[in-house]
Length: 263
Image 1: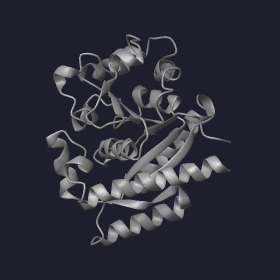
Image 2 (image 1 turned 180 degrees about the horizontal axis):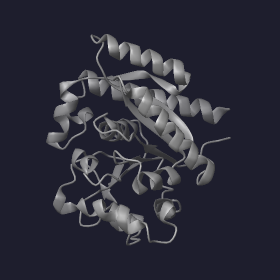
Image 3 (image 1 turned 135 degrees about the vertical axis):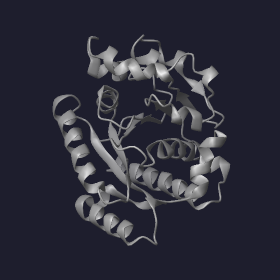
Image 4 (image 1 turned 180 degrees about the vertical axis):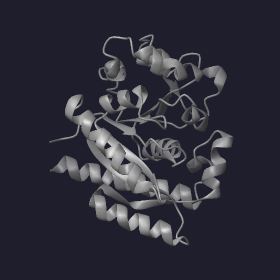
């Protein structure tokens, strides 16, 4: 089965601090650098993806909250980033109340899908940066998405959290979104000096096989610094190990997509 013209990918992990937003903005930047048209949907009330792509608070009067709750058209809430080919639907603090407000709205699980499905034809990829929780916002992302990308920190409890997330994805697939598939797992914050990191990586690869990307994202101080300058690390320091890893990840993902589409 061929992939849809616009690939919608939810970037999900219910645990915070695993490199989810960092992966969203740097993967999007690398894809745009490869000539793809990319939209990031910031679905995290913290708005870190918006900050990381240089969208200041004063420029977020319309946000993903307005898209979901007030049914503003996608084109009205979309902002161009300073990366050519990369746009973003920013987030602001209003989104923190969306979980409660959506409960009483009709079709609450499908608000995001209904808002974007028919208006994203100009993009090759839509990357949804989800909050670190499995609530209504993440549920909306999973219902709208074709695939799920899971950034996974190489730590002791990683597999336990991954198992819980996979069960959630399967439940959504069974009841709300039959076309949802696992895009892959990307190992983040990898430290080759730490034996535990190597063991976790080995266990995850044994558990999920080729669904785990060959590219691993290393712990890298430049990756940590970049958001404070409102830039993806690919623009902050494109020669650092973290930037090179995200370039390789984008290349690996695009190669896999091409292989999939040729089948």
